Length: 414
RNA sequence: GUGGCUGUAGCUCAGUAGGUUAGAGCGCCAGGUUGUGGCCCUGGAGGCCGUGGGUUCGAGUCCCAUCAGCCACCCCA
Image (cartoon, rainbow, N blue to C red):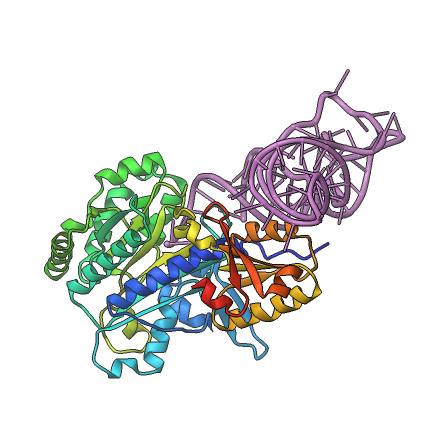
């Protein structure tokens, strides 16, 4: 049997690469304008790093990581998300020694052993952005403004930003307790999964999709009522800043994110066009995590955006399929040799030039030029070689043709 | 990890109650034009019918397993 790709891992073929390039260049432009600098970190880290940062009880750590021991017996895992590695690098390279905030972005593959479906792969790619060493609500707002701006630049308008605050270690316990009591008293109306969640992570009951749980969640206590003064002020400031920036967003009191480390602000960019996978980007504040990993006690916030999911929402554009500037159609040995050399010459000047490597009929060469989407074709046959001229044909403008000197083809193209 | 659906040419799909050489459209190649693409016409190449077993005189068609894809749950990007 022929060897197949590993399940959930897709090839990005040339036809689709244009869209990815579009996403990545737009992202670099936007991130750059907002002062973010690129960082690249390994996709393989010690397992412990993820276990400690993402949270032992999360699905990701419990059952979705690609973990294995290497030849020296160390337990390594393919990164399921980008934040942990960046924080590790930040601490290890003592980036915190210089004054913050540090604005970083990275992009690349992540790995989660889930069952693949639309918009969900085992190897997927994220644009990931982090602000390290900054507590202020401005960075929360700035990040969301930037995300919104990026989505606009990508031509995505049907995406809604959802915002919530999860409070902090000072105020969340009371909320959690209230939630627990509320659901405990109505336990029989929860789905099986949620009954289990009550003991593992009661907050997750809030965004369960089962009807009964949803109804109940509507009437459950909301975090906003439990936020301590600092958290409330922070939350209010963030939302005021978003309004000041004219960013449309919706309060999502039941938005809970899967990773343990989030505090205060969490947000998600959602769409209705991706089936069950409605999030194209998600993030939040994780103030305690850096210290947890042995770094300084600095506030941090970040988000990740799924490149595949963005790509699913973006329509193809003709300019991503641009063809060569020139196709040289040569007939006869002498002309073919000339074409070979001429093509190389033009390519050295940075022009995209194609030609047929086989002696094919003019018709076949023309067809090929058309298929490639060549802007122009230079026809050189035996009589042309003798006369030192070629027929330059414009493939777009109705096939107009004119005679040009073979002495300086580059000039004729200008 | 759980459940449902699907798997036939490069692509999108037909394929009658199991019966001889498996079809179409698009794409590809060639010719129609001694040297001119896109449209049209003609011809051609291309298929271990996902894979492995089984039932049967006979399996693309039925059964089982397996792999992959899709959809939902779960989870999230």
